[in-house]
Image (cartoon, rainbow, N blue to C red; front, side, top):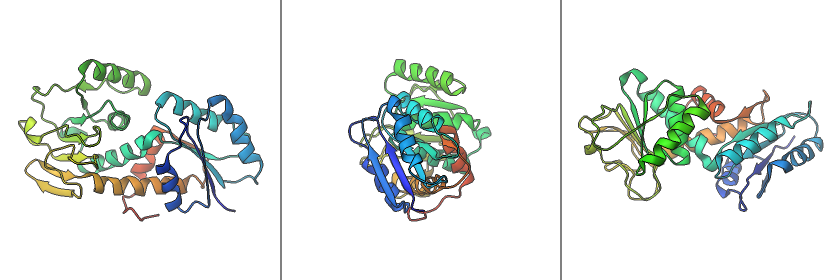
Length: 282
């Protein structure tokens, strides 16, 4: 049967990025619904599933830019289903989970937790928070860099409570910490880290900022493990290729059993089970 991916977004304009990614993952039919409220979800999900034979032919992708709301939408979309009418659900607000999983997959392949702590600069943003959480789950000691210390510490405590991780430490730029890896997850078009801010070079530098200038000074957009004086450099384009490959594989997996909610933890597990591939791998 033809595959049907339904995008739920609580904002007024559903993500064009998510629908574009679904096209390149060879989904037959894509429907984007904006301004979706939690109380509407059971009717929408059941209408979509009851109209088709049971089987993994329909799937739901939850986007948006507000973590609590998107979490609630995803949980409701999964829990309201009536057997045998099952569909998988993926939760990826603002692409944060698939981006973070691709970054942490790269971190996991390059640096072991025993080699030193990890610094996430821009750790208070949606992608940064997801990276901090996922890296902590894998046993890394994680520090957060942000311009506003009070807000960073507040978010660190919230991440600790919500995702059951050790509270991430705040990195003041004057602190002499031997980081094994530095990840820039700051806002686009803003340099947030200079390698010479550290006294000792890290082994790995990852920058996800695709809008010039680079988030990490000296990292080039096309860097894919380039050896520099300050560690192996990965730039936004190379990281983006891994993210898109993961995004496409995840969409395809939604149309396969088992019945599952792909939340932050499940997307990380899926990324670690998957081998990295190019942008066109699908």
